[in-house]
Length: 259
Image 1 (cartoon, rainbow, N blue to C red):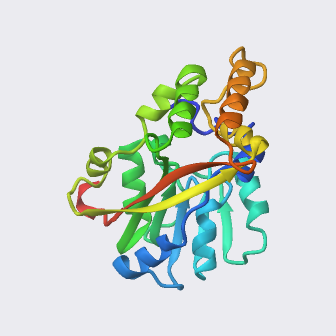
Image 2 (cartoon, helix red, strand yellow):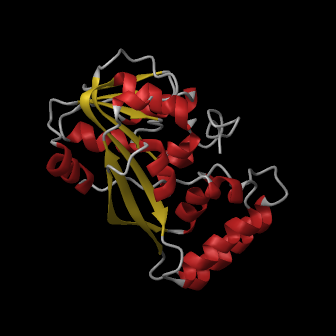
Image 3 (cartoon, rainbow, N blue to C red):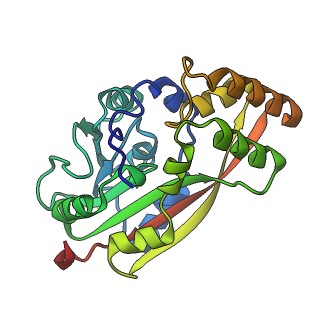
């Protein structure tokens, strides 16, 4: 599913996104080093780089990272967050039209952004900008939904009050989607544990950072926040609740002849 408003959805959520979205395990770098030969001198195009959460783990590895981000507010947030990394620059562009030179990057990455892409056009663009033998890594933080009462009831709130939750959730990448994108069985998948601890304000911010969360002027906002506080009070331990994720990494090469 391609969303007509994909490039604008987060314009009014940047502050919450920066403060309350989960980061990415450093183990991703180790995985790509071991399996894909990632080295510090490799250049990475981080597509849909947003506020820079994924870009940062590669910058810490010494890589030069080009953040490609279509949303001006998100891009500005990333520029501020990563301002101390001399190897980072951002460009206005999208998965379908990055503006990068042919065969100019060693890795293309996408963190929590793949579901906003138009697959066929994005695939052609990735093949174009990747050097021969380059790698693609699609990375996704997914909440664990069934392991705790808190996780199940939080999911229920999203289903009840989220303004477009089902359509967004249905677009999240699954193995079949990734297989179609690679047009090949020659890709790999690894999972890593991840989590966040939230106080009440942090939990509110985490929810507000989601594109499907109602804004303050929406009729669903007040009842949602009322039930969210109740859920927090019923599940907090020592003033926090724990949100569990798995971080999934799909990685492989794109056969150049099939674009």
